[in-house]
Length: 164
Ligand SMILES: [Fe+2]
Ligand SMILES: [Fe+2]
Image: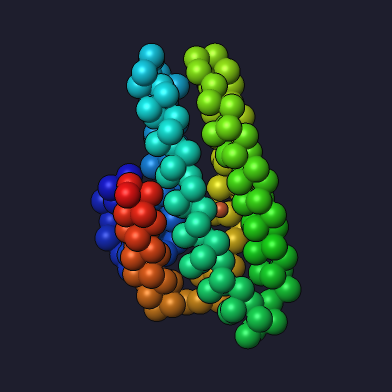
């Protein structure tokens, strides 16, 4: 979603960037739920692609930065949260692979995307409620703002590769 009424430094850090992505996925999903026919198939593919890009940004930019800070500062809870998040991503990856493999249409596609998004919603909730505050505490505003830049660049690169 395109920002809110308030513009603070928080709006320009990696957490806000990832949160925008989460909201965007959710609104794509709402679009999927009300769409019909070919649009549904198109939107399902878009959800899958966006989710793959989002997860890779987290796995390759965000989580490693949190992990490094966790190690430097010996933050046990943070280490456990990153491990749990990576485990959930592995589950999502398997799930995504199954959805892609089956190439289902109509009712089956709906059931698959519903199940996938239910899983995504649970993961996103834990991420925002537990991992983000720890990342904020460990990396600080300056660190989170720098990471936003890295995340954006990586997003552009991945989108470019997927479109090729
Ligand atoms: Fe995630
Ligand atoms: Fe996420």
